[in-house]
Length: 125
Ligand SMILES: [Zn+2]
Image (cartoon, protein in one colour):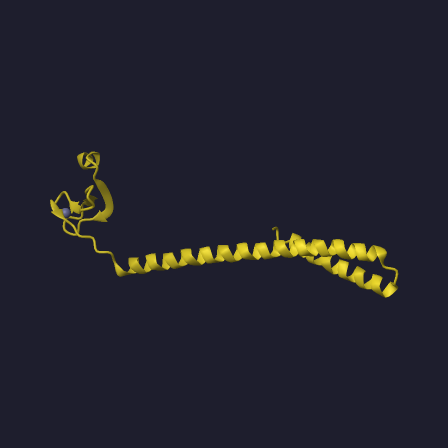
């Protein structure tokens, strides 16, 4: 067995169906049992195929999710910038404003903007 491993054979985590000894893999990919000295064909089970397909789908979904998160983060960052610009704009308007009802409206707007910014700061972006 040690000789086989030394000569580049790989011991597989499978047993020969006849003698129940470990199966080895040659460098060319052939699998065989050194005890019986015969080739052993490994047939991929259907469940394994389903598993790899399911895994591929899971990977795809993870990528989709990551992209969705990135797009969402981009949208939030953009909205943050817009709100900061609006705060700046309405602060300047508020400074010049003398009519009480308009001042009230600007103050209300600014409070809303800061409220949104506070909500974003909880999102950890
Ligand atoms: Zn065997």
